[in-house]
Length: 46
Image (spheres, helix red, strand yellow):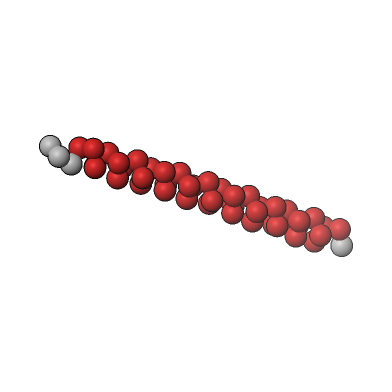
């Protein structure tokens, strides 16, 4: 049953990759939100 072991390993790696991608995306979105907030503050006096 080497097939199921390989499948389980592939599924685990895919889940890890998805978690990493989600973490990176969340960081990017947080950075964009911070940047947008800073822009609003800078331009808020107009």
